[in-house]
Image 1: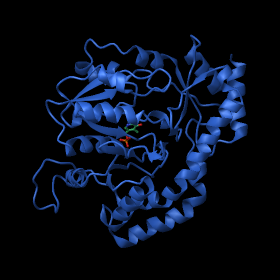
Image 2: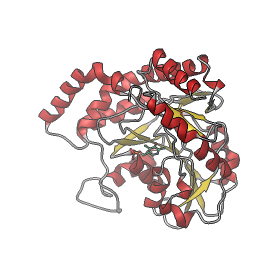
Image 3: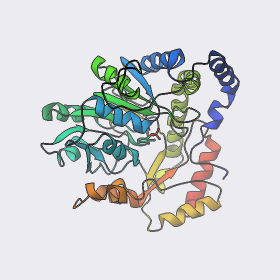
Image 4: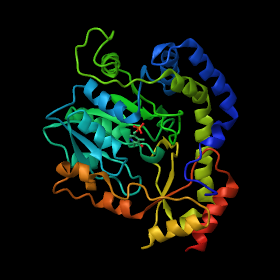
Length: 366
Ligand SMILES: *Cc1c(COP(=O)(O)O)cnc(C)c1O
């Protein structure tokens, strides 16, 4: 494929030598799991986001499970999640022992709103997980207001929005906790699996630290059933090299999004609308395709050397694994987005020429 959907590689290519050196130092140190490299990463990542604590964990899915458990969300509790998201958001709720309750999303921003969450609240609801989908940021003001009046926790699934902000605050820092993934296709990638929980609460941070280490402070006394879910030092070393690059990369993503608009993408497709006050980090540039033959368009684009994809074409509430949590629910906007969405190539290395080619290919197939 000439133009791939995700292309992080071009961005970190110039840094490979430095990354190799830093990884070499970790190998010499012999400290591979947690330790000083991970602690330094946690300080630097918290500093970057402007939040009190960051705690490194094994991946973005564990980050959600552990964040919920750190707030004592578990069996008997309901957690509101969108269905139009990656499967992991709801999966993580189940791992915590709670029940995912699916809500619909806004048709233009693809995000949960106070209204969509309100529709599925019950007296068992203990938390809501807004997902900052594709780098767009959910309307945190109204969601926090709702959460406060209903006395429920807010865990922001920020896996796709590292470096996005809303009203000048980093996505992931406004709720009771925020969770991040450093999977290679995310905005801040590592070279394997990695994740983090961030929070301004000392109590939640301490609880997350214990849960990632099998429910222990010292690996000798265990007072909770936890996880073996730790960030390793090699990934932390990679991430420490990349954090200072992230804002620049996200600027390039925003420029690419603007170029799509400037070059007239809206003649053919309807782009995801950015919420008010948001600086979106565009993990992907996702649109709605109003033609009946979206999948034929994806094929045609592939023949033209352009990788596009429909994301979450089978939304989470329609997955077999979620059957017992999806009985008698109707999520019309989610189904509509699942059927119509089309993700276009996006990344810090995507130049104007490539975007012209993507749009030419769409126009040709129109
Ligand atoms: C990637 C992703 C996750 C899970 O992260 P992993 O590191 O792959 O476990 C969770 N939620 C969303 C929205 C994601 O995109």
